Image (tube, rainbow, N blue to C red; front, side):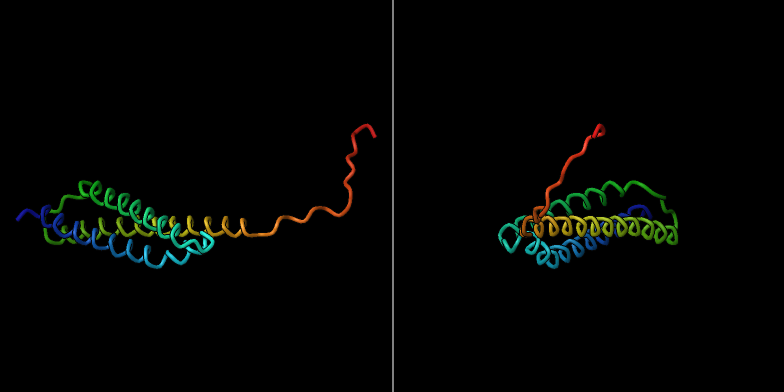
Length: 135
């Protein structure tokens, strides 16, 4: 069998499996952050969580399939493992980047929600006088 076909046959299920595992983990464990960011509105948090996971899958599956054609073309068994290692390594880096991007978004949403619930700033107690340059 063609070594390139073997590489593809191994790369796709491994990459898709890793993507699904990371996506499910983010979906399951990210919900609590979204509920907090949405000020306890579970319905809104679940909706956002679903939209985030769909976007996550679209971006990552798109990358996995596009990246299929790049990299070395293996001709030996050792090169198959090298090609798989390089491709899966890049996929893992992209998944890690997406994970940190999601954490960044969750954190921003949470901070914004906390600001909405914060009391208004206290007005100054004294008067401020503007002085001009000619005074």
